[in-house]
Length: 333
Image (cartoon, rainbow, N blue to C red; front, side, top):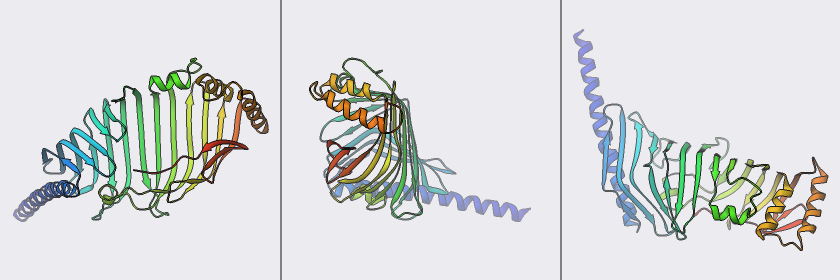
């Protein structure tokens, strides 16, 4: 019995020593990281770093957080940031955001408020901490811009997972429920009120390859760029209009995509009416576009549904034989 008590006491003292060592090391690591960012020219400010959670957790709270990257002009600030982890799994972190925080870009400043925002991040246990998987859930999100617009989202879910069979590739998914776009966008896109002011559902599911792993270097040095997108599902449900897309794109080092995306649009005539009402399509060419779309719709499926291929080549986008314009650049700042 005496030996058991001794073993328990030794184990307890050893665990307390481990927790004290781990919490102190975590404090020093975070403080050092902030100082390194300052040395690189960042605006990096944290008023206090507190590590609690003894004996089984490392619950870290960073107070009055402000980070700004001078190269991209992107800055983020919040009253606090909490990082919660088990003491024996410090590379698996739950992040908790305050109900209000701000993101500034060279174009505008966005203020985010929400009922809840929580994310879990699982990293591989190595010095560079490469991302293995992550999830984020946001409820009752409101976004306000200093340019005067605002948008709302009832619920949003986001998840990533590293693909074991591919180097530097992740499966990325997102779902947005009851999205309320800015009123000026609704007025511009749908001035006659053909559709509701709320987009009921949007989904995204794709396997995406990158030029480098998402690890500490992705924040400290440069963001990895996209090399390939295997799009499994990009869809939206907005009133009677349903849109779906799937396909594959290769992206070159300038961010120009090449490939083919199959799109399916239900109630396409209403989309055309909206385009004419908003001025995106002039009355003079609307009949020609309608005839071309009717031809595409007649090739497959019901007459109110277009099922065709978007082809991206030479920096341009084509819907079947119809040129739509320049292809978007896919670049992560």
